[in-house]
Structures are given as structure tokens and as C-alpha cells.
Length: 77
Image (tube, rainbow, N blue to C red; front, side, top):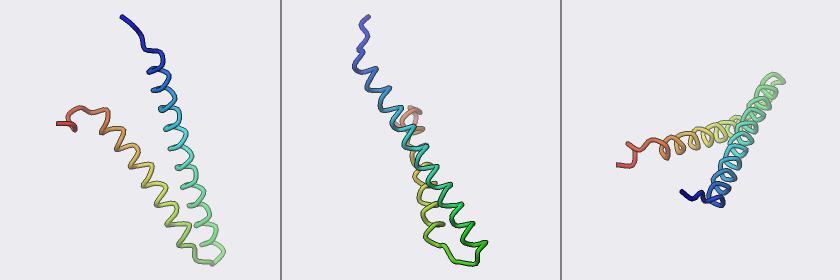
């Protein structure tokens, strides 16, 4: 049995990259939500921050659902 080290390294790199990307997008969503709350407490409107947070959280949810789609073989039939 031969182990393809380059393929293993490629999978590891993509996994780490995707994990970091999702974590960064989620962090941006949390920060945008905090900006929205700060703006509301000071009496200003902040629809852009709320929309940015929603987009970030939806992107994270889409990444999770895509990962589940790739893992669960019944979805490929």
C-alpha cells in the first residue's frame, strides 16, 4: 500500500485554510453584530452592520451545509 504524501498534504492544507476562513468570517459577523448593538445603544441606526453580520453568518452556515453535503453520501444519489 502506497501513501500519496502530496495528496495528504493538499487535503491538510485545504482543511486548515477552510477552517481559518470560516473562523475569520464568523469573527467578522460577531464584530459587526457588536457594532450594530453599540450603534443602537447610542441612538444611531446601523442597518449596514446588521446586514453585514447576517451575510457573514449566512456564509458560515452555507460552508457548514456544503461540508455536510460532501461528507454524507446519500446526498450524492
